[in-house]
Image 1: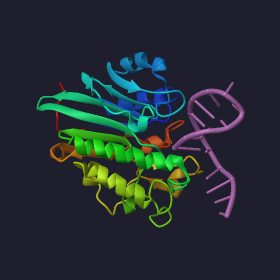
Image 2 (image 1 turned 135 degrees about the horizontal axis):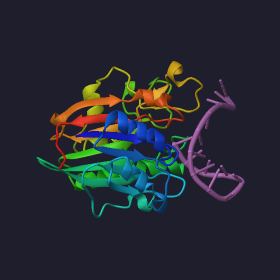
Image 3 (image 1 turned 45 degrees about the horizontal axis):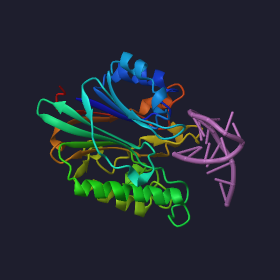
Image 4 (image 1 turned 60 degrees about the vertical axis):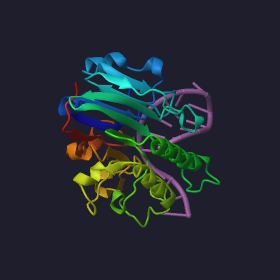
Length: 267
DNA sequence: ATGGTGGACCCTCCA
């Protein structure tokens, strides 16, 4: 089973890029973040034509939005919390049927957190911390098995997940309070699948800012996008690849897709 | 120390 996670930064604007990605990678399931499309305007027909008849999405006007596209039947998770009571379309979850039993897939878009790394003066940073705390509490109360978390978690936790550990230590996405909370969330039962394939100290980035003339030359990246597997699924991980080339496609997202293969057969 | 770019949209917010 091949999956892709990608912060597409506007689904409607980048449909042609998604089309190219699908033709080159042939994924079974795609998890998108920052679709920036309200549900009534979701381009369902175009995605069906791309080969994904099963889709689960929630979006809003202008911001956020997540979507799970699948070639195979998926069942939306029932009764998930409304994180922080904001109804701001940052999470989608489905069950995938496989020959060895059901697998749960979560697609998250964690709040970016604004510019100032102080929850007392920056409510966006406070929201980011609170969001992760709530999600962590939920997973503690509902211990995950045969589960996958993917998405833009907007935190680069490891030293070599950023271009400069020192220079980013006070920059939102790489500060201690965020990293500690991300760790606590992961410790509810998950392993960092990307780092199983590319261990530290190798640099690993999935995002390069638009505010850089030559992103490739300066290479000031961060690993903001993640793939986590519960321990029981970790042995099924076969491959993982950050599709860095997509950052140079026509009118790209600032995030690139991450593709991975699990030794599972969807039904 | 600063400002740099890009998407959505009601012109300013968000990343």
